[in-house]
Amino acid sequence: MSRSRRGLWLYPLFQIPLMLLGACIVVTALIWLLGLGRPPVAVAIALDLSSSTYSTEFNAPGTVMYQEVAAVRSYLQQNTQQLRNKNQIQVLGFGGVVRSLTGDFKTDSQQVDAELTQALANPDLPQLVANNTTDINLAIQKGTEALGTIQQKRCRELLLVTDGGANVSSDIVTDARNRKVRINTVVVGAESPELRGAALATGGIYLSGQQNNLEMLFTDTFFTRFNSNLKWLILGLGVTWIALMWTLVLPLDRWLFQGLIGLNRSLSGQLSLSNALFWSVLTPLIVWQLFNLLDIVVRC
Image (cartoon, rainbow, N blue to C red; front, side, top):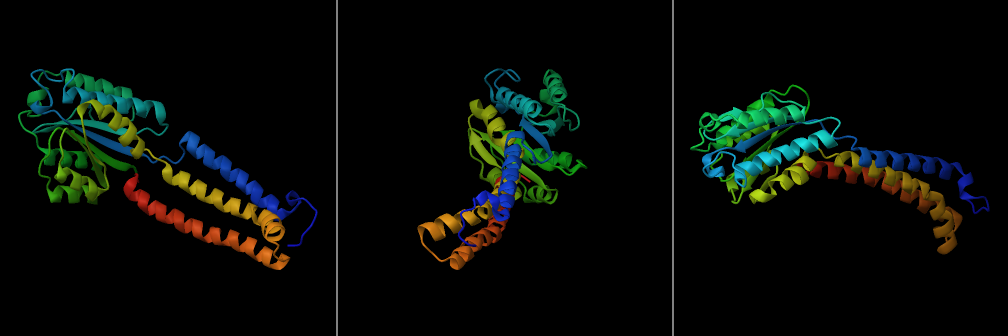
């Protein structure tokens, strides 16, 4: 690489990487702005409808149950407004018995919302779910079985909300893991080591909080995590970084190694090329390791 008065932009070694860099920046920006690469998702939302989640009136305003339902509706709204490839959603209600409140899985959030409203208006619903007790194991089992009926290749997320902990069968957790179902749990106003363990064992999320922040947890945490395209964004950034390193070969050679440091042309060229080759090898390794971490931290 000889020192020359010709502009850097006249060399193919600068022109070609620069064009690739521009293309990578555009593609990465589209991934970020348009949410490209979001995975297809199926979500079974299991709501605790036992009598401990409300006072004397079923689904009364201000109760845990009322906040659960409001959180589901917030999730449905996000599903309609933010996604092109919408989540398939089914809502289950449980006490001692598990009952589907919205029929089969659907991507039409308005229909899910309407069926949920109709189910909650049924005066017999407390008796149908046996609201005098809470069977967490049965809720996880039925949610897992429902998600197991999904034939398409989708991420399978079970989102369970309850106001108390319970013993969780290891066999049920193993079955969920075998069916590639992630158990995600919100425990309102309490801690449950058993449910935390179930979430960790299946790669899900465990949260505990107050009833007044359920909507925020559903939209800002669960919806965001379930529908993350972070893997694609990291891949785009990785390729952009490699293109940038090749674009900098001539500037580093001429301006840094020869101009500023004063190295000879041969050594300067070797160093600038070595830098590009180094990052071309290291960046895919870093991206691969991040993908392995994201399999646990983010979604599928």
